[in-house]
Length: 150
Image (tube, rainbow, N blue to C red; front, side, top):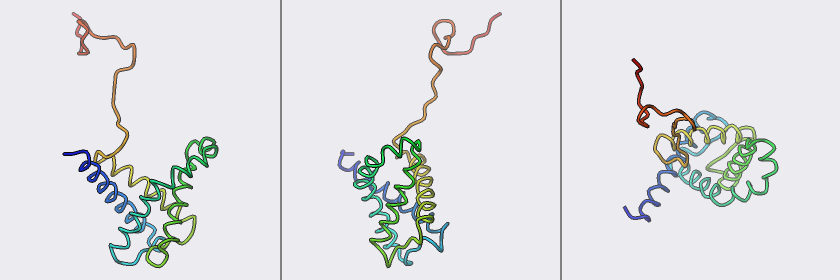
């Protein structure tokens, strides 16, 4: 697969994951995060949220860096909620979030679902590996296998 095709596939994967996460948040907070019953409106809202996350979120993170450090990164949820409220304002009749509180809860749900789906699909930027601790004794012959002393 060419690098351009890989980028397109990764973009579509992240868009589908973002759409599913927004759908779950709208289902959980069904009276507070609403969209007109067309899948098209949900796709547009998730695409706009993804674009804002790609271009506006880094600027907001840089501006809020002291708050992010002080809150140990939890202020990121506030930034995500503000972006969700901005999407609501831009797509007012077709996608709505009632209040900042519900935007915060929606951003929390979207973050959790997105992380879980990215890990499950292998689209995550982090990897978990288990290694032996540094300085751990090696078995006889330099191997890592079990040792039986007689």
